[in-house]
Amino acid sequence: MRSGNALAVWGADCRAGLVERSQDQGRYIFSYNEGAESPEAQVSLTMPVRLESWTSRDLHPIFQMNLPEGVLQQKIIPPVLPSPPE
Image (tube, rainbow, N blue to C red; front, side):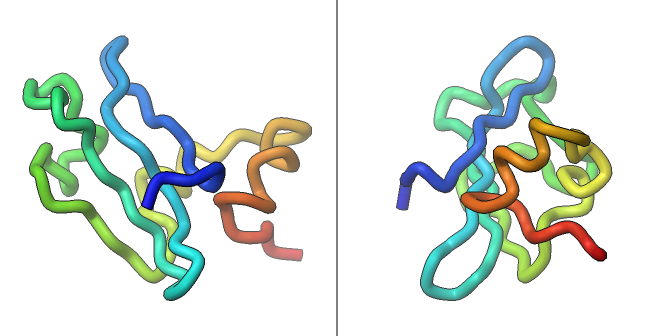
């Protein structure tokens, strides 16, 4: 399900995986890259490296707390992120 609605996630100077929003179910999916086997690639203590994707109705907390601000946030909100609260 790779599309233009995905963001690369980096950790410890390596590309850990992709976070994307599914178009059909409105869920957020984070998938580790196949080569991300080391513990350094782990993006959160609650999301250890595994082959199975991490799926959530809301944006995963680790990504919520690290959202960019300003212009960068405005560029990524439409394709991937939820709209900011008013």
